[in-house]
Image 1: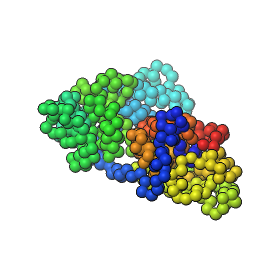
Image 2: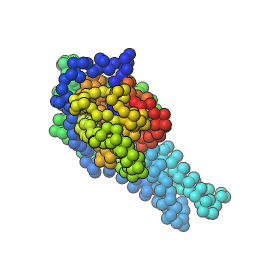
Image 3: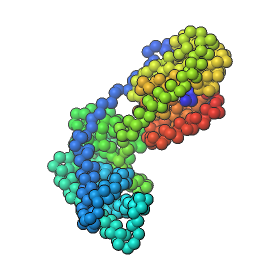
Image 4: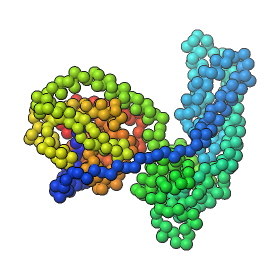
Length: 495
């Protein structure tokens, strides 16, 4: 928990407060100036069967290969051995991406990773046996384990080859509708590859390009419009994959389109014009008939671990409300005696997908009217604030009621800080990336705040840090931000 009001850049920054919030705009009534909420995004996902068929098939092939290897190399060995090995092998393979869906599938490509993880599983079995008092020392047990390792690796490779053969056959019979962003030479060549090599399972239905006039007579016949038609084409043609070509992912409009396609449930790929980009240490780089193809990460809200984040938010916020109830009661009494009736201050803030919610906090001063509440930027130096209000703001205890917002689902413990609709509208006009902050729920604290972007600092920098947090989200990153926030609260600055 860091700050109450977001602040504009200080003079000399990218945009000063005086430039961003002109006197003319501040004198206008607050009514009617709410930021237009972003439309709700309804998922248009690939069929469940197509999403789970390959991972389930690969998992089953590994289980069968391990069982067969145990039977062939050690007929008298108890089945518990195979179960223990499988319990270690499956998480290792999953963490290494051996069960993920890919465009180019090859059992030989999987062979080194399968052998390495099988060796780790066997080493674990040896360690576990030693801990249980069953020593496997000696040439005979070690040779048996080596035979088990070799047999599993060979059988798993053969089983995967069979699974991949069935996959290619299924892809040829029922390819997935695919949209190609970019109608230039590279986009047309990629589409031609997909039509000729149906084993990739992608059927191009058309191109989107916002600059069709630059294409001239080379424009493809299936040009469906510009990027603004992306959502309608995805829904109309039941698109499952989107491929961006010709470096269009570096364009801000295309980047926003790709994010929206991913949130609609499409699998998004980028064919970079700079081929060396695909080799910068990315293990998930794929290829389409020689063209490097980089998959975009799933949006944070679509990852399985996001449900765990929400569960942890509810548990931590609920526990915090219980444990801090004496502190909350003391703050409420202090505010009541300092500012009179109305202990809680309610203010409209913008959250996930631009939806407006009511944020709660302890009142630190009483604004003169609703217009001031909606458009007054920073009150940390307001002469009307009493000693209680200054103490609450300096220690961030005025933010404690927002734990109830977290329980309700309006907010998360970690995320971009919420702002009032008036300023969301203003900053959205000034900074193209600002609206992208609303892809995830807002939070009590965030990556921008723990990096010192509080008080009178750059809005542009905050938006950059917030989007970086969203694009690199993980549970461990949330934990780090909470720990850094706790450390900052030991040295409060009142911003």
